[in-house]
Length: 253
Image 1 (tube, rainbow, N blue to C red):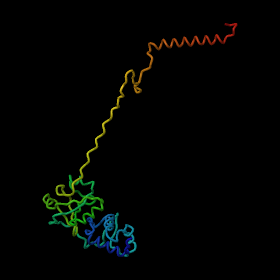
Image 2 (image 1 turned 30 degrees about the vertical axis):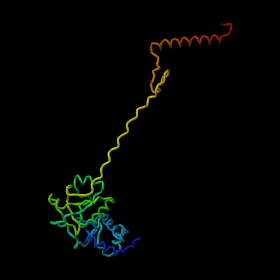
Image 3 (image 1 turned 135 degrees about the vertical axis):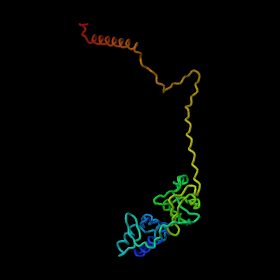
């Protein structure tokens, strides 16, 4: 288990990250100097001895130190004193190659449509391959590393900005300026098995098959039904006469 730093020592480290070099940790501030607390905690969890840091430790610093060096607003954090914070400045001569990572399920879209910002106002790129991979694992453990051909981007009119020593920003990266691993081939859909026809049983001489599914019409035609009804009535009357005759006394028969 990592030995926890005192609130004072942790506050000093946070001041270095938020006020001086967020780019070293793969973090980019917005125009007001804020960073999402969620992103800060992810970056800290990658550092040796800092995986224990949670939101509660940040709140503890605000409550216990007389003059904390940062402030929190709406799940975002920034340094109070940002004189040494690197500005996002135009980069006229960026490195020839830059790197970024995308989710595995987004690869097909990026390869066909290009790379757009997700979660930030601009696409974040790094000149350091290892840092780009670290940033990618924060969004997807199996993130795909892409290489940006900077000269092709410049030829297409893409403008780059520098956000510290190793991070660069761009509004958009065209798909033909990206290179990466090939997309996995889609497996062909399995063919549906053909429906099996019922097997006909061979007939033997002098026999026949009874089709149990065939519905036979056993209804009696109306023309014959009237005659049957009359016969039933006659039979009923004769039976009643015989019954009454048996029930009469001998002297009344």
